[in-house]
Amino acid sequence: MNSPIALSDRLIAVGFERYSGTFADSQEANNKLELDYDRLCRYPKLLDRVVDRMCDLAEGFEPEFVAGVPDGATGLANRVAYELGRRQDNDIHCIYLGKCVVMKDVFYRSKTDEKTIKPLQRGLLIEDVFNRGANTERALRVDGLAPKIVAVIANFNRGFIEERKPIDKPVYSVVSRPIPALLPEDSGLWVYADARARATA
Image (cartoon, one colour):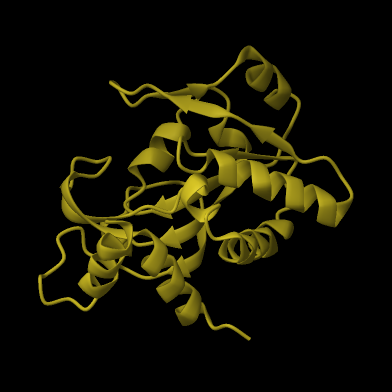
């Protein structure tokens, strides 16, 4: 059986990159972890493992819908909804959210999504990479969404719990491995970023 550590290393190997910029909460960073659905689709077996474990975490909540934090988790949420529905022989709705590029505000992608969610009571918010929770917090501001969300489920939690925003929802993750936004140059994690850079050059 593959250990959580092995899965952690695999995810870092496919998504860890050098970076010069800021995260969603304006935190300065010299690295980032790109694990959106499009990236994971290049590694089908890895994607299957991630979705399977996210569904394991989700099943106990008996959700009626899932919603992905835009834009990185949108495809992942859709896949989780499908797999959960298949497991439970029941339709699990996927609510699509969008994000304003400039203001970063999150909204229902369509009137259909806003209408679909109204009679539903229990939902999960899906994250690809959770750090301090800035994007999660923005998603929970969407009109009528927060009271229905019973938990947040992330693929990878790279944040430090003492730095987390006060999100009034439990956060679960397939992998939890704190990675500083400003990583020292002598960190062993740069091996992954540099190997990936060479492979994609």
